[in-house]
View (cartoon, rainbow, N blue to C red):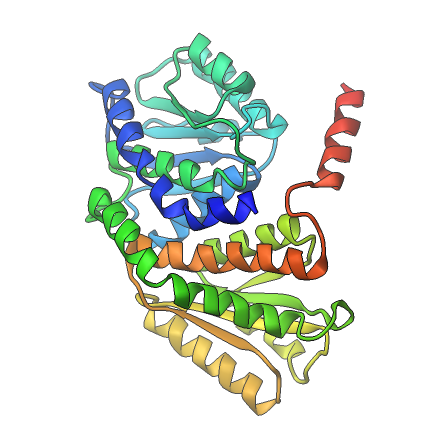
Length: 346
């Protein structure tokens, strides 16, 4: 399928970073470059790119990050040295546009070079309104579903991160080149992990299908959320996400016995906190002791290649599962109904 083809080619799409970087450097030239805080507004696939980037590289962050997935920006967030990022692939996402308008009304009433904004979009209203108000825009290529545009959204965020020094001690050019060269070499391993998960989730027939409960660490939480959304949209399938250590204070108690319709999946990565890895291992031991079938995914690559490794497992699994369940990955009927209903309210 076209979607699978795009997923397998996704590492190459990270090369768009160079173009975005040249553009954003020029736009931000002479402006404030060291921010204290980032307010990111974006829904769905556009939002998940930020969640994935900021969680996976959390140890290197120089700024406070707040991710808003709603209609409103709290006025008290407008402080000096704040960078606002508005990301909507279509450019027409209601919630993101609402936040953008809120930003404009406060920013225009109090214009200060201590507060800046940048938009990421392929077109739509966000592109027009950004240009009209002199807000820099990174323009993504058209013709993708928002969730397929994930590599472009991520590349744009990386370009902004480099220009605005949001992370310390990361050479993004090197990270991207490394990802593009490493991922093809481990593609078999990635596909095998997706196949193993598929077999666990739907071993014989759609009647025995299980729901994955994806347990992540703070660092791998963005990967888990991407898996959840890809399974929701491409496979029309439920998935549940929780994060260690918090789930050790509540949800773990529910796992005193197996549930035939639930499959726990644990995701850890190479440079996770030692405490988190220890907790993951204890969780796996508990599952073994209670005879609970589970899958433990260990990502051994560091940096962006590790993030991409994790993301691709879920992407490929979501397409394979859609085939097994005999559902089309592209259409999202219920989302269309909701959008239509909301239009009729306006």
